Image 1 (spheres, rainbow, N blue to C red):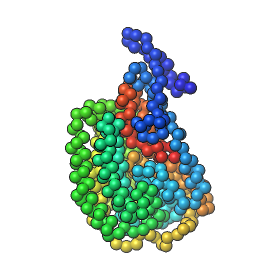
Image 2 (cartoon, one colour):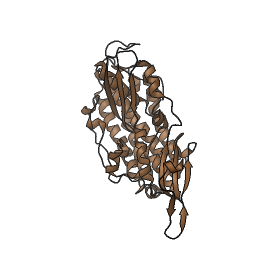
Image 3 (tube, rainbow, N blue to C red):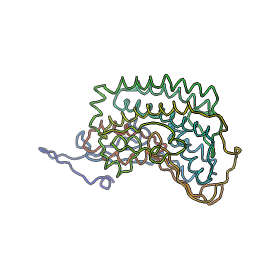
Image 4 (cartoon, helix red, strand yellow):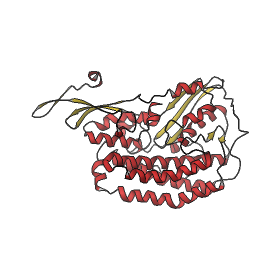
Length: 382
């Protein structure tokens, strides 16, 4: 089996002839962020080659979605990247709305952006916290991120009734309105606490000599390789390619907001960390504008329906999710359920860059490189 995985069967030391050995990291291992396996070809501690092995969490999401009605699929999207439920809802809603030819009301559009940017902050806090966990800082940095996440999912619970699996978006709007209390709590977080806590993370971590020594120059992905491997999100932008779907093809009302696209110059773990830190600041910037301009009015186009009619056709709805471009490709034949349903999952595609980033590094580096990609296995395997 391993002969089919690797071309290199024997490593040559300058002085001593040595054998390369194959080591499995996972699929049950805390550093793999879930049931995921990395088959590493090693010469001592050096990675000669590495192959990601997926499929241990496959749930047949896409075929189940073709069995369900269009509306029944909305809560299923929550289970993809379960850290970013609102972003999953957003992309799927856009794809179906293109087929239906409906446009959400202004207030719904603003609330959608607010939920999406809060989701980005949640995801990046978790990503940075667990990256430090992968670097050997144990669970303390993760708890700092989880604490801020809890305050944001309190808002999700206020608007949707759920903390993780929100099922909040609907075709043509939202399931329910954002109450004045939820708006006020969001403003307090965005205007005071979140900027302070992002700066606190920055102060603790950015100039930390252990973080810099473990991350700078490690897991480098060149711009050419990043583009060739179809990477998106922070993984692509850290390599110096300032591509963001919110700018490249603005959806919803993103063209109304002022924000900068964060990108790095070196394509290493450290730049991927810095990009996520800056993206949180830019999300706060967008949130302040959205909350300031949030209009009154309805949150649904037409009446809420338990059954929707989707005309025959095909569409692709995409958003700039926290981990990269999340897209839904749908084909409708006019029946209540999709004829074809496919998810362009960013972390699944970003994993193709794991091997080139790992070659030549050490075993401990691979754990950190995987953490810097920021995968969620629910989205990788589907």
